[in-house]
Length: 249
Length: 304
Ligand SMILES: Nc1ncnc2c1ncn2[C@@H]1O[C@H](COP(=O)(O)OP(=O)(O)OP(=O)(O)O)[C@@H](O)[C@H]1O
Ligand SMILES: [Mg+2]
Image 1: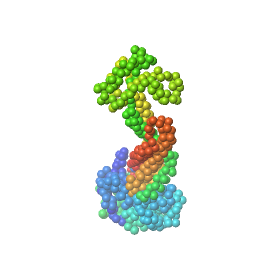
Image 2 (image 1 turned 90 degrees about the vertical axis):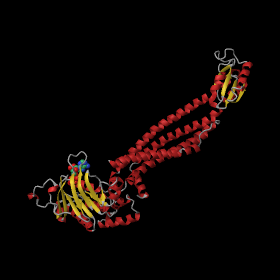
Image 3 (image 1 turned 60 degrees about the horizontal axis):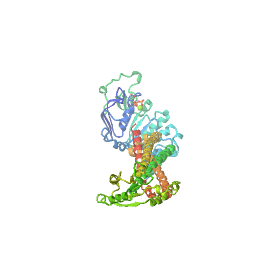
């Protein structure tokens, strides 16, 4: 479903690569956390999957497309098969909840009849049917993020990419969002989520990919944020070649 | 994207940017009006050339008692001299080139003079004997006036040879200079219109950068992202072109047809039909500039 092969990305003007020969394979229906300290390369990995950025070396394959070979004109078509949410929600302040969600379908030319059924359905899914006519400014942070999730899901993507979706939310609200994402994942959507939130990762017990300075230093199924309590943490080797990926496919 | 949605996006852009849109309309209006003036003046020159050049005559002015010494040392032309000139005009050498010619005596010249200068004081001070007798020559090819000049200048009894085309050329030069000036103003104004459209669209894109980034994320095509912006610039430029057309047509109708053509009955002027005929050009120029400048500016914005 998503595969990185020795993907290397160095930003213009940066002296070290943001991702250094990273390989990763994500199967259909998985829920994967990307964890790591700030600047480790989590967002960069998501941007490569979205083809916001392109690798300098290696390959990125998403939903059967080799993103290196995807022509500029096909990028739009490709992105329709993905959903994305961010820490800062990115809603349009002058549109209502309903309009924000409908916007994602209107701009890709979906027919009116489709929009009129798909938008209420997805608002129902995220629990915002009652607040469809509100402006984002009249919603709580958690509600705003649920609108963003609704917008990401309304075109029924196979993959949902989430970059710190709970980063701006308090723990209780974060849990609501995680429950929602888990439900979405259970219905078949592959979810890749970058996060700093240790509590969430520990509670969810999903696959965890840990990145440090552009290298994957851990990839474990149904894991916690840290394998071992941090006060007794072993020294982590620098080269990914030294790492046992825990039998990951 | 559906048309209704594109239009509503465009309308949102226009509302948030209304004063800039108005300035695009005005600048394209003024610049395209100058384009129209350029085109119509060229049309006018062309029309007058075909009309007048064919009718232009060459005048062989004969010496009168008032002629200057240098040209006519022997005073007024004698009957023998006139006969010699006429003989040469009708002679074998010139017949192939001369279409018709006629002699105009002082009384006839005076009558014409009075008619031409009826409104001016000059007619009161001029008497028939102060005017020249002349042979008026119509050439088969009006450009060959050199021939008459070579044959008759310096001949006894001839004061001056004048090709009417030389007067016409002065008028045409004047009109041409006017149309060049209009063309110059038009190009400067068109350049500012283009830059203004580019700037406005960039501002408009900037104020809607959230929309643009979301459109890109959810997979809207580049074309459909650009379209509302390009349409915004296009609409403003087309409105400017329509204004320019209306003003041009109004000026043609009220000033040229309604006033000039009546005052100068012997000249044919461009008509309302002509100024309507150039409408497609104005629309075409305005639309092309708007499409190019707005797509270039939004394209650069999308890349950044
Ligand atoms: N557009 C850019 N230009 C240059 N360098 C960049 C750019 N974006 C990210 N970087 C650098 O690449 C590295 C990885 O950044 P990235 O945003 O992927 O980290 P992250 O893991 O998402 O961090 P955070 O947890 O703070 O969001 C960092 O060193 C960052 O400074
Ligand atoms: Mg990040």
